[in-house]
Image (cartoon, rainbow, N blue to C red; front, side, top):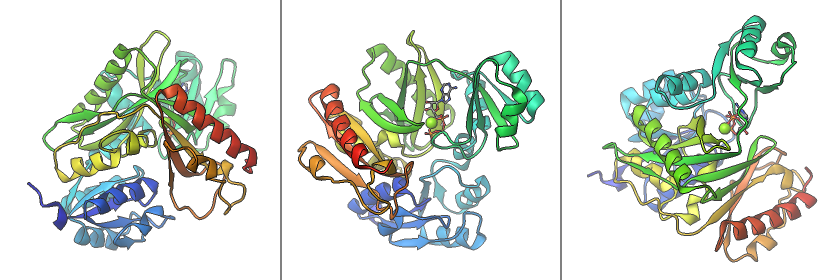
Length: 381
Ligand code: ATP
Ligand code: MG
């Protein structure tokens, strides 16, 4: 068994996910190094060492591998070449191959299709003619960039009667995935962890609600039939197994009115829809990630209480550097506040989140929505 206190965990990416991962690492007395990629990095306040260089910097790769004894990613948009170089020198989980699949929609959807995992029908398109053919075959849909999508960026909704030439003109990338429009009833996600020896552990099914294509609320347990929750869990577990995945992964699904599930995408890291685990489960997704990456046994994923997670986006901020009044949240004895330490708010930026534990999901939701409305009213929008 590994002696945890001799390890230095290396985190590629310095965002809030890295920050929360390192808070957990501190609790276990692990040393750490964060490689920011040169971006603003909320994780550096928690890290022992920081490498503030781009992800393709060869010196940075060497430096990172000299300091870290084991590594992970908190962000998938890292060049696969960089990940491969790291993996040649130190243990990296998840693998470069797994991150490579999840970081690119074309590879991701091709992977799902090849393994018979249900996903939206799609075609890869590289010009207006190709888009016209895809629209003809698939019908209404979404045109998405293959690389670097997040929070709905780089996506165009396509309806019946839209012109392929105009849409291609608007589309700001050389290559895209044209995906069938899914008339889903709800969006759900599963956090699945897979350990060193192939054991898996799934967290309870979460229901996700978006606001302008950004996650707004996560409600757990999702209010669906047990059979649906079980099916979603099995899907997530299968994705992790066929990918020979190690670490924690978020699997986002669309739930149809008839109870069928379609996988939308995977996140090869802790995920925003897994933040509820921080107070509502015995082991948070960050704790679980450290366990999986370090080769420790996985922890229990048991839910201790119904919970609603509210994302605190920058539009709740009264001013760029003026945070909302947290007093009403502090007055709720069963709510917790997590702020990411970002210097400036802008409307679509994830500034923090709050978890509301409740007797029921409905009770937690009512309390979360009340505070959201209050903060929205004083926010600058
Ligand atoms: P994120 O980083 O928030 O996960 P993303 O940019 O990776 O977003 P997706 O998750 O693919 O993009 O899509 C964002 C949202 O757009 C989805 O959560 C869903 O609400 C909607 N959406 C995406 N694809 C489809 C589809 N094929 N049919 C209907 N709605 C869709
Ligand atoms: Mg998504």
